[in-house]
Image 1: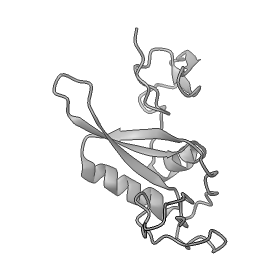
Image 2: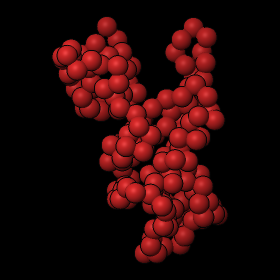
Image 3: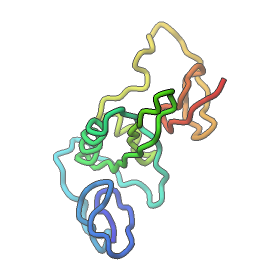
Length: 150
């Protein structure tokens, strides 16, 4: 069984995609479901790893963002993990295929450059986990969520 949106494969017995909340199909030769999405997002490659896109402190916000992505044909999943602060508040991370990261930014309006002033040049380095470009003084990778130590 396959999801017609994210193209993930499921074992027999499953009827709905847990990430996209759509009915599974037996073959992927059926066309993708139509949406009113202005974006043309190609399907993720089979087995393509998912990366952390952005985090939320409220599950409702993460669910709304995930629904917006799915509406545009971008499969997304929510990862729940314990926060690293002293209060240990749960964090809800949206994860998307690496090839859909830019499309997710376009849909949700997230811009990793938010808060960086145009007149301030920040040195960029490669994330040791995913290779994505991050600010030299960043404490976390905006692409995969990896935390950096000093």
